[in-house]
Structures are given as structure tokens and as C-alpha cells.
Length: 163
Image (tube, rainbow, N blue to C red; front, top):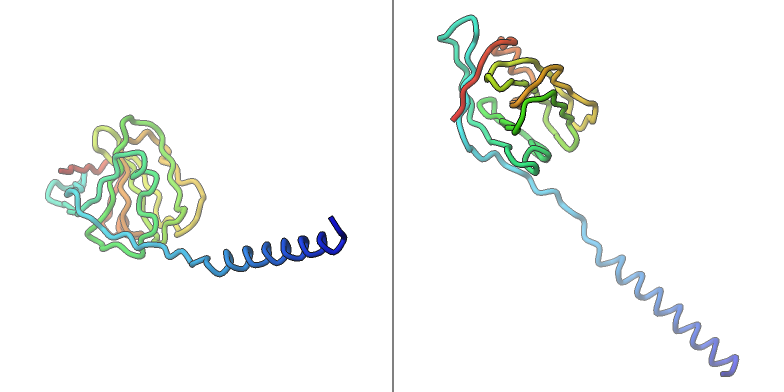
């Protein structure tokens, strides 16, 4: 092969690589996150320990698979005050949540297998990956809009029922 032919082959190769690179670059489309909307799957009632007549009723989504529990309320822009998510686990143990990819501030209500509230993590901040532990064994976790557990005057020992 002559020197001229090698230069021509190198030139064609360089042009081909540049063309392929710019063609691929122009085809990149921005990824738009899809909004996830509330889907009612059940009803939950919170019962105050101090008064049998005090009840708070919520429409709930249920997270009872590994994927649903890991995803939770991620990618949501809002949630109504009469809505929440109930996380159901197979066993009772200390739990820990975080707010990765969660855009709305939340109260987390940890509940044991006897359906009694054992602890709270209030006003969990959006997109914060700090651990939010239950500090007690829990089988269930309820996520509601931040501030609601205070507004409802919920306490450790209050109970819940759901269907």
C-alpha cells in the first residue's frame, strides 16, 4: 500500500467516526419523568387511644411487594390530605426509610403487628437520603402529608384498622 492510500484510508476513517459520533449525539432525547398518580386500593382508619369516637379516615394505596415498598411515594408531585400509603411487611422489625426521589414532605407513622402506633418520623424532607428509623419494631408504615400527624394529635399507642 502506498503512503497516499494510507492517508486516504485514515481520512475516511476519521470522517466516519466523526459522522457516527455527531449522528448519535443528535439522536439523544431528554428523558421526562412520568407523573405517578394516586390509586385507591383500600381504606384506613386511625383510632385515638384517648377517645373511641375520634377517627381519621384515609384512602390508601398499599405497598406490599418489594418493588412497591422500595418505590413508595417517589416521583409524586402531591397527595391529598385524605390519602396515604400503607406499607405492609411480612415481619415485624425495626424499619428505616429515606426520601430519595420523593418530592413531597411526609410524616411516617410506624405501626406494630398489633396495629398500634409505635413511633413517628415527622416532616421528612423531600429528596433527603438521611435514614428515618422506626426506633421500635414495626410491621406497617403509613406515609401521609407532613404535619398531618400533629394536626390529628396522633400519639404512640393510637391504633389503626384497614380494609
